[in-house]
Image (cartoon, rainbow, N blue to C red; front, top):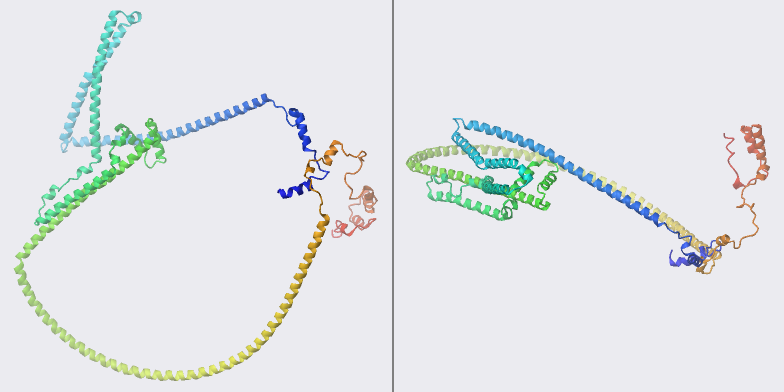
Length: 619
C-alpha cells in the first residue's frame, strides 16, 4: 500500500462504528499494569527446558557417534577393497615371477648342459666358473668356521656357566664370582669388538659390490654408447682406393659424423642435466629399486593402476610425503624419456656410421672399377679406332643407299599428289554445280516465304486495329465504372465518419452521465486517522455498551425469501400428489400427467416457470 492510499484506507475500512476495536493505548496501559502476570506472558519451567536441551544434546552426540562409525566403516571398507586389489595383483605377480624363475632355471640348466659338452666352445669357461664356485664355497665354509662357530661355542659356554653357578647367583654373589664374571665380560666384549670389525669390513665389501653392480647395470642400460667406435673404423682404413683425395674425403666424413652426434648428445645432456645430475633422483639405490619393483608389479593394462601403486608406495615409504613420491615418479618418467632419447641418438649414430661405411665401400669399389675401365679403354683405343673406321665406311654405303631410296620414294609421292589434285578439282566442280542448284531452290523458297509473311502481317494488322478499337471502348466503360465506384466509396466514407463522430459524442455524453453518477454515490468522509483506534460495535457489544434490552429470540436470523409451510400445503398440486401417494398411484404416468396439468392458486411469473415436468409427454 502506498502513502497516497493510506488515508482512503483509513477512511473506508477503519472508520465505521460497526467494526471498530478497543484503543491501543488502553491495551498498553493494561500490559503495564499486569506486568509479568499478564495473560500474554507465561512463566517458563527452566528445569524442563534444561532437560529438553540435554536430550537434544544427547541426540546430537548419538548422531555424531553414528556418523563417526559410518565414516570408520567406510574407511575400513575402502581399505579392505584396496587390500583385496593389492592381494590379487601380488598373487598374479607372484605367479608371473615363479613362472619366470622356473623358465630361467630351466634355460640355465639347459645352457649348462650344452655348455659342458665337449662340442661347446665355452666348456672351458664353464669349468673355470665351477671351480671358482667350489673355491667360494670352501672360502665361505672357512669364514663360517673362523667367525660364526666361535660365537656359538662362546654362547654354549656362557649358558653352561650360568647353569653351573645358578645357585650361587641366587643366594649370594661373592668376590670370586664377581672376578670370574668380570673376566667373562671382557671376553664377551672382545668377541663383540672382533665381530663388529668383521661386520664393518663386510659392509664395506657389500657397498663396493653394490657400486660395481650399479655401474655394470648402468653400463648395460647405456651400452649402446660403447658399441659406437669413435673415429675412423679399422675396417674402413684398410679399404683400397686409387684416388687419394676421394679416400681422404670419405674418411673425414666419419670424423664429421662423430662430431655432429657428439654435439647432439652434449646438447641432450645439458637439456636434461636436472634429471641425470642427481643420481637416482636423490634417493638411495635400495629405495629406488623398491620403487621400480612396486611400479612393475602393476601392469599398464590394469584399471586404476596409479591409485593402487601410489597407495602401495605410501605404505612402503611411510616416512615420505605424497609430494616426494609424485616428484620421484615425475623424475623417473623424465629419466626414462631421457634414456630413450639418448639410446635413439646413439642407435642413429651407429646406424649412420654403418651406412657411411657401406657407402664408402661402394664408392671405393666404383672408383677401382672406373680405374680398371680407364686402363682397359687405353689398351683398346687402337682397336676402337680401326673398328670405327670400318663402321664409318659401312655407314657411308648405307647412307648412299638410303638417299637413293628417298629419291625414288619422293618421285612416287609426287605422282600420287598430281593424281589426287586432279581428282580434287573434278570433285570441286561437281560440288559447285550442286550448290548452285540448291541455291536456286533456296532463293525460290525465300521469295515464296516472303510473300506469305507479308500476307500474314496484313491480316495481323487488321486484327490489331479491331482489337485496339474494342480496348478503347472497354477503357471508356472502365473509367465510368471507376468514377461511379469512387463516388460510392466517398459516400460510404462520409457515412462512416458521421457514425464515428456520433459515437464519439455518445461516448462523451456517457462519460458525463457516469461522472455525475459517481458524484452522486461518492463517499464524503472527513479524514480522521484516529478512528482506527476507536472501539467498534462488536467490541462495544462484548463490553455491553449500546446493547438492546428486549431481544426476540424466536426472530429468524435472516429474512425469508421462499415459501412457508402453510403456503406449500395450500397448493392444489401438493394436495393432489399427497392423495395419489396415499392411494399408491403417484408413480402412474396418468397421475403424473394430472399433477402436471393442475394449475396453482397464483400463476407463477414467466421468469420462475419450471421445466422439470415438460419432458413427461416425451417419456
